[in-house]
Amino acid sequence: MTIALAERPQAPTAHAGSLAIHPEQTAWTNDQVAVLRQAGIKPQVTAAEMSGFLHLCQRTGLDPFSRQIYLIGRYSKKDQREIYTPQTGIDGYRVIAQRVTAQTGGSYGYEDTLWCDSSGRWRDVWLAQEPPAAAKVTVIRNGQRFSAVATFREYVQTWPDGNPKGLWGQMPAGQIAKCAEALGLRKAFPHDLAGVYTAEEMEQADNTTPDAAPAPQMQRAQPNQPDEWATAAPRRDYLAEARAAETVEDVRTIYRAALAELGPHTATAQEIAAIGATKPGAKAPEQPAPVTDDGSRHADDSHRAAPDPAEQAAVEAENRLRLAASKANLPTLDRDFEMVYGIPIEQATAALLNTFRERIEAAGGAQ
Image 1: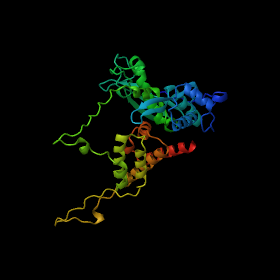
Image 2: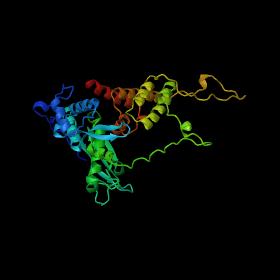
Image 3: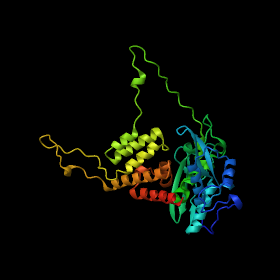
Image 4: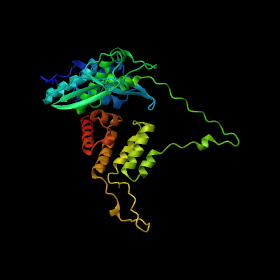
C-alpha cells in the first residue's frame, strides 16, 4: 500500500484578461459566454445550468477554457430538450484531490487497482483479451479507506449492435478502472467532487437504444364493442394523493411512483417532496389492535406497537433533504447521494441525511 503525500498546493489554472474567472463573480461575462458557445454549448442551455456551471468551476478550481471541465448536452425525451451535465476527466479529479489535500493537510493515495473476471476472481493485472467484469479502486485519505467497484456492463459505451465504442473496445481495463477511481475519489472527497462526473462515467449515457414501440392507435368503438377511450385509465394525480396522505411513508411511496413516471425534473415531483417535508409529525401507520377473547378489538393505544425513533428520524431527515434538493434545483439527488455514500437514500441514517442536506444548503448559500 502506497500513500501519496501532498507536497504543495496547486493553484487553479487561471487565464489573464477577459476570460479570468474571479471568486466573487456571480455571472458569466459576455466574452466568457462567447468562448463557451464556440466550445459547443448551445443557446438552449438554461440560465440555471450556466449559473450552476460557474459555481462548480469556482468551487473546484477547474478551468473550462483549458478544457479541464466542460458542459455536455444530451437529449432527454422526458424533458424534450438537451440536459447539460458538467464533466471532467479523471485527471481533473486528481487535481482537485491533490489541491484539497495540500490546502487542508493530511494525505491521500491508493491501494493497488484490482480487476474481476466473470467468475468473481480478482486480479491485480488484467491480461485477458475479453474485458474485465469489474474494477475496484481503494482511495486512502488520512488513513481511512474508501473502496469503490465499477462494473463494466454499467459503464461501457456501445454501438447499436452492442459492441464497445472507442477506448472501451481498445482499452477496456483502463476505462473501467477510471470509473472505479472516480467513484472512490468522490467518496473520499464528497464535498469537493459533488455535482461533477468524469467523461468515462457518463459515456454510457450516449448509448443508442431502440425507440420504444409506438402506442397502439385507438379507434372509434364499433357497435357492441367497448369504447377504448372511455375505458382508458386516467392519468394518476400524484399531487392530490400526496396532499391527502396521512403519513410521511405514504408520501414517500407516492414520490417514488411520480419519479418513475414523470422524472425528477418535473415540478410535480419537487412539489411532492415539499409536501412530505410539511409532515414531520405525521403519525406512523397504525397497527391492528389485538383481538380479545370475545372477538372484539381493543382501542387502547397502549396495545399498538411503538414507532422506531431512529426510523422516524430518518424519514423526517429524508424529507428535509428532498426539500433542500428541490429548492437547490438538484434533480439528481438520489444518484448523487448513492455515488457519494455508496447506499440508497432509503437505507441511510438520519445523521448521514442531515450531513448531505447541510452540504447542499451550504453550496446553495455560497452561490
